[in-house]
Structure formats: structure tokens, C-alpha cells
Image 1 (tube, rainbow, N blue to C red):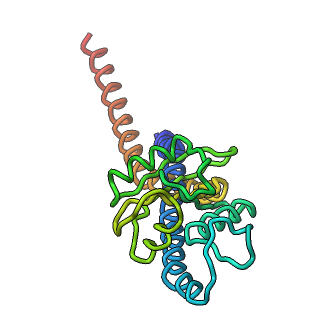
Image 2: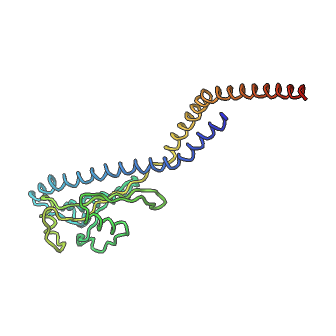
Image 3: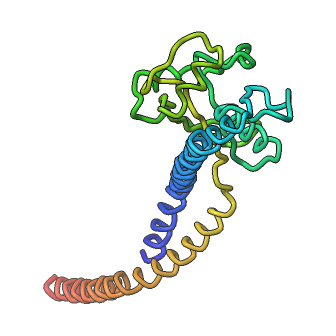
Length: 241
């Protein structure tokens, strides 16, 4: 009985461990993606507010094609996009991108995938929320996490002079910032789960022994008494007969 109890506890743990492991990986990836998107958004805002005005005051022009000139600096959106492309080149396990229904002229031929189209539609209708999905890209399990980009005071002038085809006002839904983060490696978490399984098995053995062995002793004692009574009844019946 003790063995069955221990095997049952360990079996339940093993059965649930894979589910728990995947849930843990996804939760860690979600929090990492959320923090990364905030840091990219903060960098974008700092560049827009602090760098761009100083550059323009010094007579430096902005461009949506960083490679076209060494005497111009990129628009904030271009800077963020280029930064994401660089991250992807160095295989950092994370990247960022931006997309919109109103792209810059140099990116007008871009084709959005199904996730990006759904993110655009959802976040335009729900600008206070986020949109994410877990997916597999190039045999890597990732989270694709996106947040809306709303027009701010620091962005209006650049965007309205960039030849995008419409006039923007503060608060307009401009597009989506997406970050892609690899899920944590399963082997590291599996090692921790194995350690927990060993500890659980030891605790189950100790607990099972404490709880079950006295019960087994009582059952054995009761069985012995029952056999003795049965023997006495058999002997009395034999005498009476």
C-alpha cells in the first residue's frame, strides 16, 4: 500500500509536470516580451523627444532610408525598425518590428502576415490592450507580442511631413510595435523539475511511511485477531457436533 501511494504521487507529478513546464515557459516569455516592448517604446520616445529636435536644430535632415546618406539620421520609427533588423542578424533570441496600414514610402511594398493583420485590426479597435500569440518560427518556439502605437506631440511633425498620405492628430492609432521573444529553453527548466521530483519522492516516502505503516500494523493486528476468533469458532463447532 505504501508503494502504491508513493507511485501514485510520483505518477501524478510526472503527468502534470509537462503541462506545468510549458505553462512556466510561456509565462516567463510573456513577462520578458512585455518588459522588452516597454524598453523599446521608451527608447523610441526618448529618441523622438531628445535626439530628433537637437538634430533638426543643427540642420540635420531625417530619412526613412538609413543607408542612403551618412549626413542624415533616421526617423524614430526607422531607427526602431533598423534596430530590430540588427537584433535578428545577431540571433539574440529577440527582435522588434513596426508596421502600419500607412507605411513610409520606402516600405510600401511590405506584406503583412496573418498575425500582423490580426494585430493591426484588434489593436485599432482596442488601443488600450495588447495582442499576442505563441507560435513556431524556424523551429523555434516564440511569443509574438504587440502593442498599439498612438500619435504623440513629438511625432506629429515628422509623420505629417514624411509623405505618408494623410494628416495625423495627437492620439491617432499609428500602427503596431511587435516584439518576438524565444521561449526559455526547456532543458534548464527540466533539470529543476527533476530535482523537484526527487525531493517529492523522498517526501512522499517519508510521509507515506508515517501515515500508512501504523495503518498497516492495525490491519495486520485485526487480521490476526480475526484468524484467532475463526479458529476458536471452528473448534467449538467441532466439539458441539
